[in-house]
Amino acid sequence: MKTSSYHYKTLKDSPSDAELISHKLMLRSSMIKLNASGIYTWLPLGLRSLKKVENIVRRNMDEAGAQEMLMPMVQPSDLWEESKRLSEYGPELLRFEDRNDRSFVLGPTHEEIITDIARKTLNSPKDLPANYYQIQTKFRDEIRPRFGVMRSREFLMKDAYSFDIDEKGMKGSYELMRDAYQKIFNEIGFDYRIVSADSGAIGGSTSEEFHVLADSGEDKIIFSEDEFFASNLELFEEKSEQEIIDQLHKKDGKKYSIKRGIEVGHIFQLGDKYSKSLSLSIQTKEGNVNPLMGCYGIGISRIIAASIEQNYDEDGIIFPRSIAPFEAIIIIIGDNKNLLNEAEFIQKDLTKIGIDTIIDDRNDSPGKKFKDADLTGIPFQLIISEKNQKENLLELKIRHERTSIKENKKNILTRLKP
View 1 (cartoon, rainbow, N blue to C red):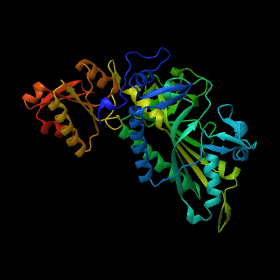
View 2 (view 1 turned 45 degrees about the horizontal axis):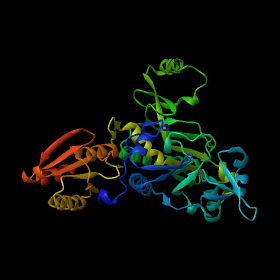
View 3 (view 1 turned 45 degrees about the vertical axis):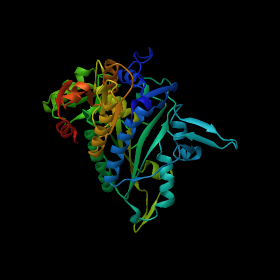
View 4 (view 1 turned 180 degrees about the vertical axis):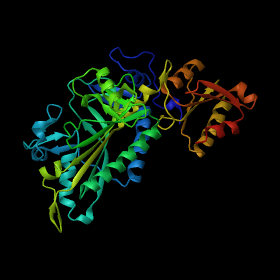
């Protein structure tokens, strides 16, 4: 793959209405393009990162025993009437009618649909436990979309739903998902905290949020130095931050910190809220039982923005290797055809060891190529020039270290091997 035939169109300046650094850099690096308020197209560079996040999430969900499916984005309103959420959810729920005057909603979440499927397919205790997930586009009609894909109206989400016969099973499924989430966010490279949270419109008895620490976060979270305690500040009554810290410190003598966080995941123990309201029951020896549910969400598209909020400098994005659009870019300095041939050979060598690479073969200045590589956050830059070629050397620039080394090709490839 070469930049000359790829959508690699960076912008020098940020649009004036972009507030967050992630929004500015995603627009400048040509990852996304605004179509309407809160609605974006993911351009090729951004989509590559998005797919890498999807793959990490999907692999860990599969390993945890969840089964992938795909539910409809358009949902019948009568299911939401059954759960009593049609009136409770508010104006964020987009409602419409088809040509036959049948009422539908555009799904912001899928508890009703999955419970409807479960009541038609889960018939016996032998069918439980069951855990289903999907990666799908959601829509919430935000009153004031802002911050790019951080708070957009249309977004990509992974949502999972577990069904168990009793409370012990529900808690076991919850812990499995909690562990899977930690593996996902560790692999992505986040500095994050798991915090107790309010269940909100979803409902249920217990819920926890996964917050990426960032000064731009909309939520404030408090956690102990040893991280055994962490909570969203919204759970505390109207008190000053210092009063909350003093109250907790008085109980256990621990040190507490308050920081801002970006919510990237939320898990819930729903109990029988939906199985009761939608009449999902299973016949057991003791009689009919309403299965206990859990639900588990991850903001796939928000993860990209959250990662940028934690990983950037004055030159642009510093993507972790796990979700960078490309792991390496080969930058050709000069117009000698032999340089392009060498770049193509190196690209093949990198592909063999599992490193996805793009060649910058544009007819631009070296400065422009270096600036674009820094802006887009590609972790490794391999520089090919006539001088390096004569010396039988390859130059490697490591984005997050801001360092450069020259060695023979074999040594460089060894350094880059995953």
